[in-house]
Length: 546
Image (tube, rainbow, N blue to C red; front, side, top):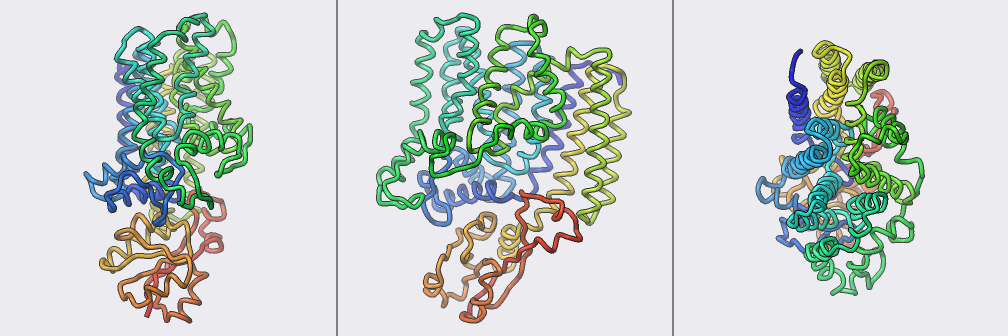
């Protein structure tokens, strides 16, 4: 196949974008996606864009912007899964565009296109199109801020304003720690290139001031919801300041593990997380890092390259030293990983290129084989179609583009992502989501009892039911609370199996429907295997009181 290389990369990007759209039409996964979707839903239902509520009570954890973006989409497209996922998907594409622009300005158009392709086809980006959280937004806003500050570094004033606006947006998604990947690379770059005067320039101090101006909406909402109401009970305490949590506990508290939300740190966590999260590019990326450590491999690169990899390095180190670690944090620095990998791939030739073509061929075959075994073990209704699609894509990837050249490596690697995306979006996730009982129960209730008053009894994590059920479900934490509503004939309760005996005995409860449940974001071989799966399933019920 004889295609101009830049045209080829654009076609591959278009193919990956097309494959990613399948995920927009799937369900919303628990816990985080469903939690965030239900928060945005409640904003729209209550017409309250200031206060954040979860299970009907005040909630303090994430800033507001993620929920505002979803709520705006709900206003336009209605409250549904597609409307929740669409903004994140579009922002991901916008992030890839900023990545292209940044890499193009520092290196070349070719590097920009390859970087965007690698970023969009990385496994965790593909997964994040399906399991939408906050990280795609953070990644885009952080990258946009870096791009505009890079342009401002070349004395274009209005880029200071744009960079500060996007940095503020990133803060209003996650918190002030996002300033580390934004500014960290610049500061180290200035020190290593002896541009110390940059630290004294008025424009950079103006940038900091503008960031604080642009985050005023977030500070205002936190102040109104929490600081003005010290009587509110949050994290089991009163006198909780939303502003203090925003600036300290949610960031430094997690890092030092002395805040209200704690975790367990493992310094090697993101090393092995990157191996799967950056597939099919991870082996190439780690080799590119080793290659960068040799001084002679850096001599022909622009000095601004320092800004790219030091931004990634300090953020990666920060994540690794933190006591609170989650796999999706790595998304924030995948753009920098993509640029590093793109630069390395373009330099591959001869023996090294042959080695990596072989490595990627083996990886493509292994992934197709593993996914085929998953299809057989899980017992999809259409598992033969799933396996056939894996084989067809694999064969096409081997015959569509030939020759020992970087373009062949990029095509073959991209088709690994195509296979992963097709399998996950069309076959795997739709089958797995049948075990998300909250979604199944919410949809069933909406279809069969449209006038029902949805409620939840003695279960704190019914986020998908919260989103999919009609209206805003009421939560009952004691039977004394439930007693006040037992005469309401429209009340339908979503509850775990443990509560069923008492409901039947004391309330003559009628079971409307039962649902099988499994925590689908924590998959195990025992769950994947259809024969052993029943041993792991819990059961939830929709019941009506008499």
